[in-house]
Image 1 (spheres, rainbow, N blue to C red):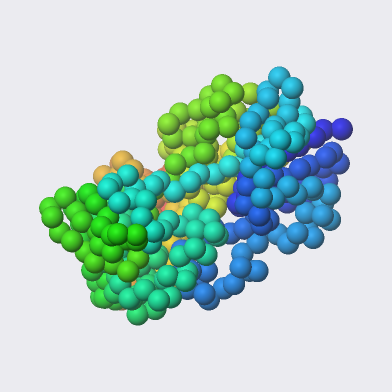
Image 2 (cartoon, rainbow, N blue to C red):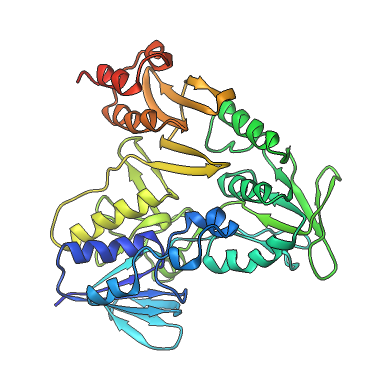
Length: 410
């Protein structure tokens, strides 16, 4: 009988459990998480959970009964501290050990911390776990002014929630524009305009050098000497993959994550890794990368379980993501790095617009705001890797489903 141990508490871990149940796996399965709750959704932490629109009981991906019904043993609130590859077991923080035949690391990552002077003051918050959001909600409810360090999706989502709650919100971004790492300047401009229209102050080119305060943060100081007062500070400056367990036992890793092959196996064939922690090759874009997305976590989990069950499924999914801000849903298909043309469909002024990224006449990616049809069909066009006519993409008088069918020859 095969013994499977899963380490993790997010979407990947929950999908691993679901896939095992679907495949009617009959061996022993144990899920270990250092958080005291069953695996839960993380995207709402910076949005509806922070605002109080949804409660903690709506975050679990599967109820505890589902794990029990699938015969999965839960060990919650226990951190895995070591892997013994020779003995095929893991050690937990309480000193106990768990034997495995196959081990799956769905360990995700942790929020990158500030390193400037005053980084350890009270009143500085990050958004990665339920505990993170729980710890900031009390202060969030009473704070009048909030400074957000980082103009990525987490920072922008927190800003939108804070403005809706009537807070004074300031975003400080070290780069020349918000979302610089992931979108075109035109998309950055759209979101800058959106947030400023909602009352958010955005300052770019601002490197934080100090957090002022006695026992708690009271102001943020930047490299040009600017000072921004705050009742609380939220930092959204990136994620660091949790590679430590793998590194300690010589499993292949990079600074970005745990290296996995097409079946999500690590350099140890009895150890798999899935989700945000993985450094994997993407067939669509022909390069190695790490993705922070629910889609990646779910798809890699399915592939890992299929391979453990003797199937030859490989991971080749097209990346996609989403973000919710001010009631607007941004849906992102593909990866835009390397594009040479940007084509826009719709009107930014109407807050309904799609941005298509092209390279040598083929679609690489699409950022779709309030444009579900464009998002769904862009995924098909990107996957097909066919030449597209820019004029067809911009013709907003025709349904995009019809345009996509013509492009795809169907």
